[in-house]
Amino acid sequence: MIDNKADNLKGVLGRKNKKMTPQRRKILDIFAEHPHEHLSAEEIYDALRLQQETSIGLATVYRTLDLLTELGVLSSIELHGVNRYELNQSTPDSPHQHHHLICLRCGKVMEFHSPLTAPLEKEIRKQTGFHVHDHQLKFFGYCEDCQRELAEEKAKAETEKEE
Image (tube, rainbow, N blue to C red; front, side):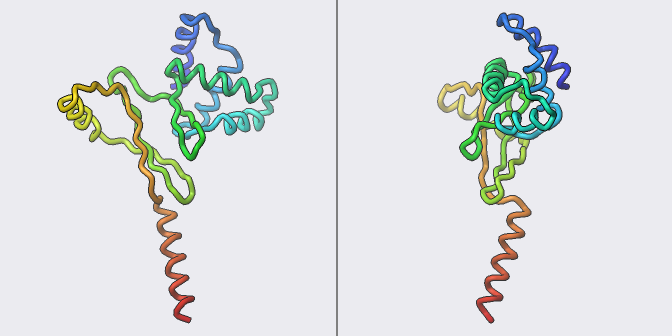
C-alpha cells in the first residue's frame, strides 16, 4: 500500500513542482512500518534516529508532515495536546476517516469504524442544508485494561478500608 501511496505522491508532488526526496520517502517508510499508529513528529524523528538516519532533522520532519498532510497523504489529529499523523485511508468511494477511542488513563488510542455517521450527515444536510465534507470523531473513556486496573484498585482500597 505504501508503494501505491508513494507512486501517487510522486505525481502530486510533481504537479506542485516538488520532488520525492529521500527524506520524504524515509518518513513515509516510517508510516509503513507503523500501520494504524498515530505518530507525533518527535516519534517519527526518534524512529529515524533508531535507524541511524542522522541526515533528517526535526525541522525537516515537521515540514514534511505539513506538506504530506496538505497533499492528503497523511491525516492529522490532535490527541492529548499533540498533533499526531497517520496514513490517510480515505478514498473517493469512502472519503471519511475512522473514529478514535482515547483512554483517559493510559492514553491508548484505538480506531473505531462505524457506518452510523453517514445517516447523521444526511440528517444534518436535510435539517440545515449544510454539506459535511469530512469529520473527526473522538470518544474519551477507559480502555478494558484500565477499567480492570481501576476495578482492582477500588477493590483493594475497599479491602484495606475494612481492615
